[in-house]
Length: 200
Image (cartoon, rainbow, N blue to C red):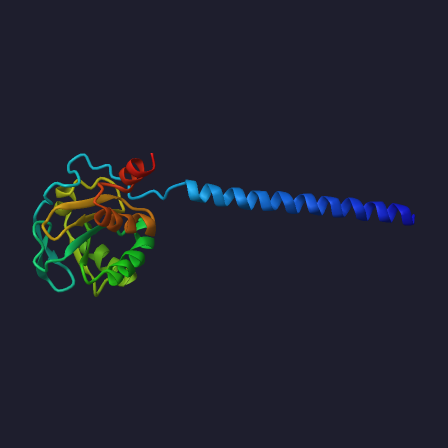
């Protein structure tokens, strides 16, 4: 009986050591994969505009102060403009709005965030309250979305100080939104282009 107990303990220790080695190998492999897999930037599927084009100039009403706001063109404030296209019926948009606001606060010295949507007045009023957009720039205009060729949401467009389209695409995460800024900093049309030219 004692011999059986000793043998079973030895077997258990061997199994434990093998499992520990396997776990270490898996953790190491995950680290290698993490280094090899590049982050995906915002996916640009716009058939109407391309990066480097002059941004369409559209005038709209800022719902937060009922004043005219210029979308695209050469920004009056001398800052870049981040257009964030959202909808009250888009669950992903709702989860990204606080992230977009946070990034805009961090980058407020050189970028202005403008939310763009379209819908009924009642729907938008409720949307503003629920998403705490009272202190944000928000336009309710179908024309703005059409001018920028927005087909799917959430969608973001970065316009530089000269009114040129710097980056645009569907955004589904904080990394996607930040990739728009990275594109401007690196000078490449997309994060995918940067990875392809530098790590191919």
